[in-house]
Amino acid sequence: MDLFTLSGLLPALLVTLIALFCANFFVRDLAGIHHHEFASIDGLRGFLALAVYLHHAIYWYSFATHHTWVFGASHLYMNFGHVSVNLFFMITGFLFTLKLIDGRTREIDWLKLYCSRFMRLTPLYLCLMAAVFAIVAYETHFTALEETDTILLELRNWLLFVILGVPDINSYLNTHLITAGVIWTLPYEWYFYFLLPLLGLAIGSKSKSTSGVWLILSVVCLTSFYSWHLNIGMFYSFAAGILTAIIVRTHRLTSKLRSNMGNLIAIICLIIGYTCFSNYMSFSCLFVLATAFLFIACGNNLFGLLSCRPARALSCVSYGVYLLQGVVLFVVMRYGIPSDFQAHMSVHQYWWIICCLTTPLLVAISAVSWRHIESPAISAAPRFAQWLRNIRTVSTHNSMNTENNIAISEIAKEP
Image 1 (tube, rainbow, N blue to C red):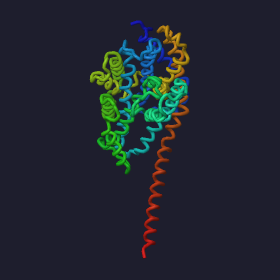
Image 2: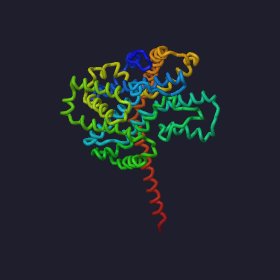
Image 3: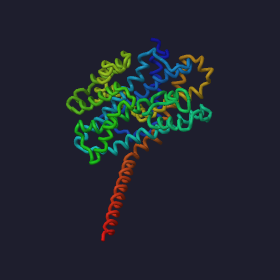
Image 4: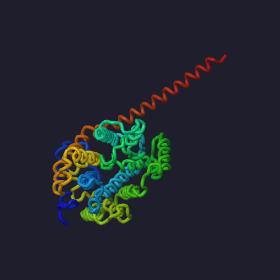
């Protein structure tokens, strides 16, 4: 294999090294990232987000040179996107199942949990939406090409994490390519979050007195599956994460799997998962990935790779790298590189653009978003939950006062 082809190994390695260097440089404060028993999982996030970025970088070369969003010449680069998403879903299933298992001994505050999810995902997503809407407005010359009501419905769909669909905005063709299509995974995340109360009931988690409301929400979500337009096959990855959490809580087994041999098995399974399967949803692919994930979840950090400072720094900005990659690639390729140059751009020239321009820019922007948007929002989640709880308390108190006043008035009217 020629190492510097469009789908060669050397470009991926260079991008990874540059991203790690930039993350280590731009993310100065790691005080909020604690070392804990699943630190290896945190370290994995950054590499997965970066792999998805490499996946879409290949698509952008095709789009820039041939104006087609198509690429299928490499299982490796295709799986950089597909397999990484599988592993992301496993992480979600794993971490939240652990919360439910721990909920057997201490009550789960569902309001606080959902507020934390809202504050984790929404602020940066709204910034992304602002960028998408601004780009569409610019590309359509600030002219309404559709009825106002239609545009408002399209904006609503995008603001609701595209749960209701991904329409083109104001007739701008393939609007979703501005984000490189990464937001398709967010409805799956939200759907899984809404199922947690039912899953907690099955596991035996303890909940506070208002758990009935959340159970009703969970049942409604479950019964409305087909309205979400989701692929049920993607939930096998969540299931693998759930099963991994159950296994990991068997502490004797966990200690036995944590070893140099465990690191080696995890690496081999990851290599097989990324290189040997054309169908990322096949049982054999998911089994290999789940095996790798199990060993990583048991504390195997791939011989220190997942726990080193650059990897921890990259994990801090992983949500930004994942969510903002499409906009960065779009802006650089659309407005920063002349179209005449792109039409005749060589593979080497393209990879130098990715290595020296878009990768440092993406990591830098993600570091800024982590410090000024994501981290403050995460810290504000408990206050947000308490604020909602106070509103409910005041509303209940006012309702009781109103009922008492009505009762007193009725008594006063009696002869």
